[in-house]
Image 1 (cartoon, helix red, strand yellow):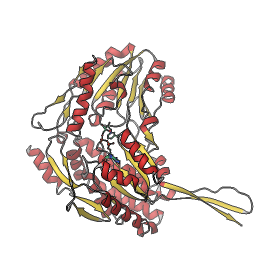
Image 2 (tube, rainbow, N blue to C red):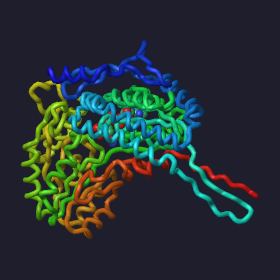
Image 3 (cartoon, rainbow, N blue to C red):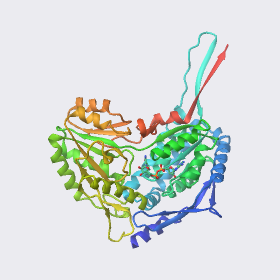
Image 4 (cartoon, helix red, strand yellow):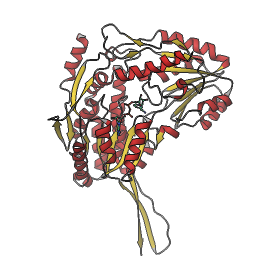
Length: 490
Ligand code: NAD
């Protein structure tokens, strides 16, 4: 644990406040939320549990900022400012990544990649600010009609715990690019890096009040943000039931929503696939971030001709995986919390009771030196029926369900047989088969011969219960601009 104490020390003081209108707001007589290091179970920090008054203050600050210096800078200058934000994040990347690992449990190298992505979102949208052009509409000789894209107003961002800092950035960077302001409500389990991020952005020159961060409980602060009448758009990532609550609350004042609600994504391996590529790719698709990724490839559809060889290979490579504290850069870190550990273990316990064979893993793990951590073994369940709970529900843990399939027709039917539609993957050497699957898959993203192969500039979002709208890339901008049409009669 001396490594842990050294890490905490080198991270420096951790935020213990909210950030409203460019100021720290400490807990005072408010409730506090403890945030833990999932790798050790130790308390890292406590932050104030923001209430509806705090949300109202943050929304008021964001509304005022809409009319302040932020509205006066030119698109070119706004782009330059967002560019500086990216650079400022890069300058503090080491510290941000360290705190992200301590707060969310992910291996340090993954946290470093996450922070890089956080900076990249700002750099990418920086380049688009002065290209948000309108159109002209031909209405005949005696009229001139043009459209312009104008900011939507105050935007709310409710963020989960699985990729805390980059999920904040993927929402606020396009929102800022379009000239909006924002209030961010981070997850209870991971409030720290969002608070660190806003300070870096203001240090880069973002005017006060443009971004406000109010940690707090979902049913209090999250609910207050979703239903606040001055919030014109809510971007939410998390579970389906909470997404429905957010949409219902936003509907009370007709605010628009972007909902990213998880998935149960299929990963198909056909008989002609290159198994040397497919095996590590299937494993990366499920075990990255300990399976706590909405687009994880959780259902392996294995064509019968390669099923046994594929599964043997997956088990053999899973056996070699290291499980440890994120600071030690293992293959896999802990789950986020005791609650999530219990939830994931519940899935495998119930699967065993239904007679499903757990081929490897399936249990909480104790790691020497990290006995209080929330570790779960990398797990593969064999011969899972397509309608079984393990093949239908989002586990959000490192649990792969193997489903044998006869052919591509059956694979497509099974791939589309859940309520979700976020991502899908296929391994094959036959481009026609790959494209057939890609076209038929009910999914917002399809990966051919490389799961998670798309980058941060590629539109991301789901069909069916996986959500509404798209984040990332140019597609995200639509949520953050109103189109105003101006018609002149000559
Ligand atoms: P959640 O959906 O309850 O929480 C996500 C965010 O929503 C958090 O910031 C939370 O504080 C906030 N929230 C909670 N209730 C709210 C409300 N009434 N109004 C507004 N905001 C509210 O998810 P969870 O409880 O942290 O995790 C439960 C399950 O959700 C996981 O096991 C997993 O299946 C799924 N999940 C999915 C994602 C994803 O990326 N799609 C991320 C996290 C969790």
